[in-house]
Image (cartoon, rainbow, N blue to C red; front, side, top):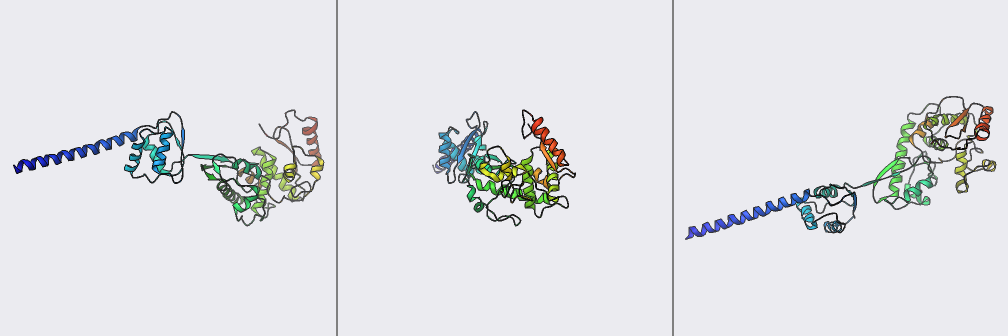
Length: 351
């Protein structure tokens, strides 16, 4: 009788153990199957996890957006994996074919979607801030008047002025959604300092600069004078020789910058004679600050100008320039390209 009872109990325990193991196996298989299922999207979809979101809130929104099926299984899947509290905030891109396992991995590793902002060569600081402040994925816009406080201390060779024109490197910067505008500005400034220091170490000898900042000022003028890469060293050569001969630079972009919002698209003789800190038809030497954002090629040209004897240049109207050694030759070129043979499709940039 006792033996029969023991066998019955033992058999019951084996059955219970079998059922438990079978349940665990079924659960394991079920979760494995679920992890291999694909997110039900037919095109790229975006999803945002907000700082402080719990697993439950994330799953609730995923289900509301119809980005997952069987939401309770997704929660169990995350908890079994031991990552329920490890979801990273950010904006995610969910592509067709993504499995639930891959989706959870994205959330846990912070594989967020990146966006980009491009600072264009030749932009003024006002244009640069307008573009960054209007970017839909950047936050905390920066006003021009607040920029000095945002940037803090500047390099030693930069005059301590509220005008931070030209101190941000023209390039493309990637970032996560929600990044503050100040973060892009700080990265662009650090990048400029790195490039400027690198090019300064490779500069030609006997240049009329006392600091990298003066070279940056020259680079900004070169950037505004031509969009033709091959001409930049030639433009730089003209300006360097004019500085060495104590000739005024006489470059229109500095006049335009000095006029600010008063410039409406045309220059006249009165404007060229107007005394501003930036009017190089009036002042000797360089203006007090850069006049635009620059890239590496303009900096390189400012520090490695072409040799030669040219002292003048005039726009041909196709985006390129004619260079002259003498004033008489220059005046003939001006008459030819600006008056007698002026192109009907005259333009200042190459197309």
